[in-house]
Image 1 (spheres, helix red, strand yellow):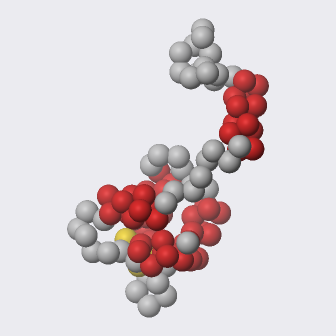
Image 2 (image 1 turned 90 degrees about the vertical axis):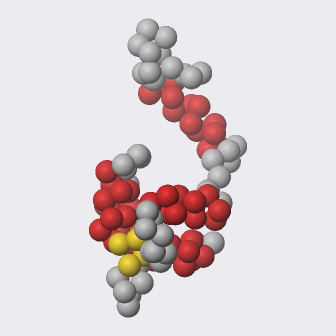
Image 3 (image 1 turned 135 degrees about the horizontal axis):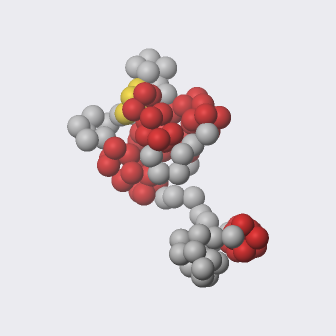
Length: 99
């Protein structure tokens, strides 16, 4: 809100945005999500409460919804997240791998 363009509601000029983001990063105000928040997010996606997500479903979700991941980010995540035996993503195990 502090950097929003007053003439065009909802717009932000890059030259006003970058210094604010740089300051936030320098102050370490953006912390990674807690394991509890990550689990809550995965549980929200796991409608059937199976304890895992498929590679296809999660790939589609992180590329098409919200702030999209790049293909490189998806590949990096999948390299750690996928269970080699089942081909699924057991998200509680994945969260533990991240911590």
